[in-house]
Image 1 (cartoon, rainbow, N blue to C red):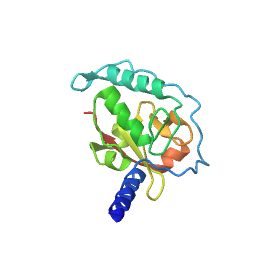
Image 2: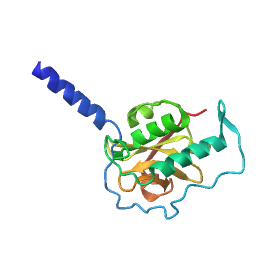
Image 3: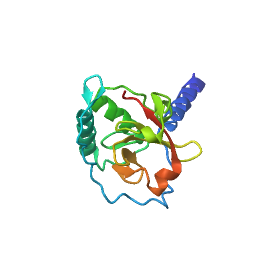
Length: 176
């Protein structure tokens, strides 16, 4: 019985570790000095069902305002600390009423893979930050994305940042 409990505990730890992890070697990291939410575009179109571009913009903007600066905590899922995949999952559920998986590994397997040329607001952006480490954020516009950074907590960063451009992996579209 004790072996089963230990095996179960190890299994749970491995599941949590498979989530959002990243190395803390941010030596080339240059923080985006423009820490504001991107400007709203002058057009409005339907994205999914009755969800318009303006509604998506407002939903992501509200999530950013409510979570800005909340510290990163590996395995965290609250305002006491949150990791990148939990932040993305919460944003999709709370603001867009879309249920997605909890871990970065599972999130990277949903939706449709998109080229960087077709990137749109709401797309999930994935990074391979180490051998088994992954990171995820939500694309905004103007080359910016919303995410939970290990160094800055919930923040907005630029895709062309030295660190993120180096570790860019793929884009997945969940909102059609």
